[in-house]
Length: 310
Image 1 (cartoon, rainbow, N blue to C red):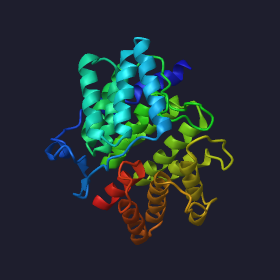
Image 2 (image 1 turned 90 degrees about the vertical axis):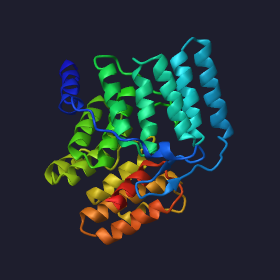
Image 3 (image 1 turned 90 degrees about the horizontal axis):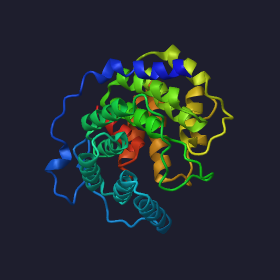
Image 4 (image 1 turned 60 degrees about the vertical axis):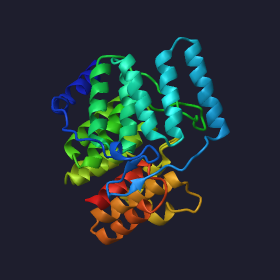
């Protein structure tokens, strides 16, 4: 246990010493009715929406409970998360920023704000926030993070540390900074405590290694993922890993019953699979289909968008 903990501390040193250079975020030039500008130059808006009643009741309950228990930071996080669930990502970022002014040493606030900076395509700012979170939680016990809506087993699967490493790796990946992304995913794997998080990190790490041309290492990673793993949430990532492994076919993944999130996730992954196998035209077509959909906050959408922008 002690050795594992030390390895987690040592890996980030390679890239935490250099803060990314940032420019003014694209969204700051937009009217408040708009959210951000895509990597392809399109203005992204959020249609007015009301949270599902079940989600609204749960978040309000958790927020009030936190305030009643004098857990002010938890209360502020739930209020900002609720705004983000409503599609008001810029307002959520502002709420997290206000909270950071009150509690500048709280790593959870940077982790959550960084997540929404990714949504707004402000990757440099996201990376800075995640790196700040890493510095603040280094040497501390990990913290389980509650889901907005519980999964089917009512078992939270992610934590402050796994979410920070996951999103840091994603921000680096989206920028094409694959060495840094690989380090983040390796750290994430070391602190993962369940199959779902292992599969999520392995999915992005596999693609990162292939982007780096480290195909043997990627193949070795793939061998650690079995077809019969018991999962609660990350089935789409697992199915894509099985496609990469040659066990599933793409036809087995595509279904009219898929959600918009599933389609964005599967679309990016299948496009990647075509691309690394020399079918770039097919990959571009799939990524364009994802981009033409409506779920522009989904990570598969943003990744497809980044591929098209490159």
